[in-house]
Length: 335
Image (cartoon, rainbow, N blue to C red; front, side, top):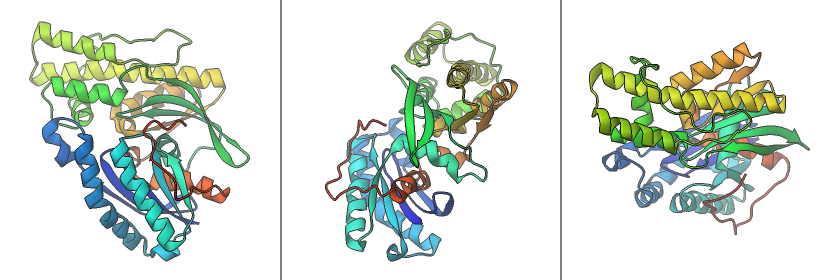
């Protein structure tokens, strides 16, 4: 089954063609980083307008690279939510138009389901059940992912109560005067720093609680800057490493606690922050010591992409699920 996946939930315009939910024939992403950099973050109106310009050329490129026409596609999968309302609408409306014009089945995919199934595009994906740690600019969540009657089921075990981890990275990077996107800059600087130079708080770190909170950590960093000033050189590296360690420590700790509680020995790390080198290393090391296996998507598959939407949508199409032409975007769609 060849599925065309469309993703426009935030600031990446993406399309991909994937075979049987496992083998990408193409994966095209048009980034808007340069558009939003001057504002220090994503501007929803600008994101929507850029999706309008980019989406059809991106779809054409995805079909061309895959060596197929729209008539040779077996189904279309599109992110219906959650995300920015205007951005989602561009993708949903385009997907409906393509499905109607080519008379192809259409399915709506939850954005986080896409992230959780990005690992299916890896050479050796995990079997079900697995624990999914989704870490991005808008989400930090833990899911138990099982398979029932051929369809994935997602049980939410814990989520952020305020800022997502990626949001905290970007906001702190802005405080430090680092360019957008900030998480990448902090990761780069932290590689030359001492993660034990400063001790920042680990919120909700007590045993048994699987929720996250990063707003206090962000405030602690701001107060640190007010007391000590904005650092440079090695001091900046140390501060970035210490701040990053506080986030990574909590993410790894809660992922392992959730896996132990659910009796699951496979952990999937996904979402944009899953590309963070320190998080990948710490989670892999701690899970290995606990007798668990960690599955890491390639860095390109951590960011928003069409291939993950096609992979998740393949399950739905194979089981006969369909979305009608009345499909609408839902910025607060629940998984």
